[in-house]
Length: 292
Image (cartoon, rainbow, N blue to C red; front, side, top):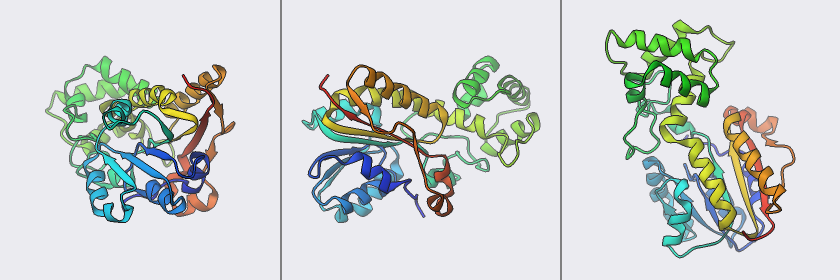
């Protein structure tokens, strides 16, 4: 199983407001949301972004079934405005971003997202140079603690950072499993949650610039959407959701957006049983009211 897309029905209900429109799927992944939308709405077209090499391969495997209704672009969605302009597109009818990490990425031990991985990488795009290994083995204790706290909301950030520097005196920390061990010896378990969860989240977000990328996408979407066009963001933790909520609120106050989700939409109990990772997903959606 490559990845089960979260809340496809709810996503389509919020996103599609023009039955023959042009839409952007900013996070193609395994193509789940794109495939669902194309099947449900026969006259729409989609421009699909993803910076992950595996997603690029996945698109090539499925390109024929999309029947020329999908244009795939291997790039970071933070570049959406520039990339669309390069193919002479200035406006679209909807923008979708599922900003969670796919099941495939988590489960692939060669990517370094997993606690048990034998590498310490965490790059979503291998063309980028910064890795989690470089951060863990070269950053100061203060910088590490700041990353863990800012991007992971880890309250034991100082103690964990100090433990990492102490361990570095004995040699390079090469693997995710080594890092997990250091954290687990420093921090007590919190129920069923692995003690390393917040630090791993923080490293992944920092390595990939995820929050900054999201902020750029939200800013550019204001201009890219047609009047009546919609933006739908699926997030998986509070940092992302807070950014989306604040952006939509600000644009609503300015009269640019009408917020479609006064409360976040979450997965049904039935979906969570089928796809446990959907339990953390939150959908926020807005519709553009005026040009900016």
